[in-house]
Length: 554
Image (cartoon, rainbow, N blue to C red):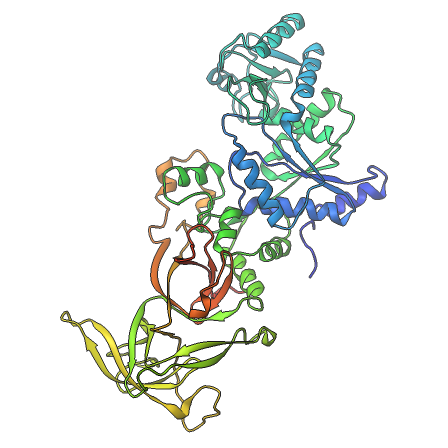
């Protein structure tokens, strides 16, 4: 399969190498450790690692940990795990905080060049002074402080003499620039808080827009690949590289971010779902985080194929979430053992089957991969079928079980419904059937045909299991287009109250030794994964990964 991931970036890198502008390639994946990675980050990971691999280059994993108020070592560990699970090993592991001293010195250089100043305006005042897209900003009254005064104040900021928000360091560029990012952006702010990596060494921290280009230059990154929301910041990125006199000159290249229907991609909104208990954590299988997809049962191979087939573009359109489901099915169909599970049990008694008799029936483990062999399943007088596979008064073209109708039990016999047992409320609680011993599966019987085939499990040998079925967490396909500053209630109103359904049923006895993350195709239901969070040796929980079929067309 052709790798389309770098189809708009590859020519740029190739030209750089051919013209001698570059003699090597270094990319980086630079997450902020303030949340868990999601499927959108997977595109960035795969893009950066694939490009470096294609051009015999290197890829660094670097944590942009410049905001200790929102960061945590938990997120650092989860990001490492996600990158490795996706199938990649970084060449260098770095933290922005490793470079804090160097960044501070570069800020000093800007002050000495008259290109940075300490400002006493509040955050609200800075915002008001900035202007709008149609109106220029105006200079801060502190903009013309002397170099000596700025050096002294910045030193005192570092020493902790000022409170949070009391002062900031700003670049001195152009308050009338048509690009708002160039209107004296903040470079440093005060934050008296403990950092997960540097402890209490610092009480001033660089802003992401200042730190990021310096980090790239320090690591000799050649191509700084990012999403389109950073395109307007490219002039600032280049200004910082140039004015801080960094030796290395990375090139920023933007591509369209990945949006998926029925999916929230904002880390702020994902955190809100976690904090307000709409889900049971960042790894809840309804979430689009990589850890959630892994827990649900999605494979790294399927995600890589999905991303590579999409390729990167300059567009920001939404991809149908069913496309990823398609690649999961394609990846699992040859790998996953087949088995039978009954999610909503209805008891069937086969009245003419000998009491006490148990026979073992052969069943293929995977008919699409015969090399996986066969399994044996017990069959006896009492079995469970799905409630939906019986109707007392069926509509036309209903080919499953109803009074007087005959169906095939998968891997077993034909059975015919003879009687229906109900409780005092008139609810069906048991079906009585007869079987034809000549119709055993694999016997070559051709005397008659039936149109319905049902799955089942043996009552006396079945293992209780919990099944978790999922619908999209977000009902509105356009949710990802809601503005970031939209009111929270607008976002939460799109949460699907039926996104999780928990059922208690039964599985075949040969499933007794399954392990977390084992994957199976349950006949007629779909692909399921053994949940690693709630499964114990005495309690099996299966997450539905995807259904067997989809209306999505490639």
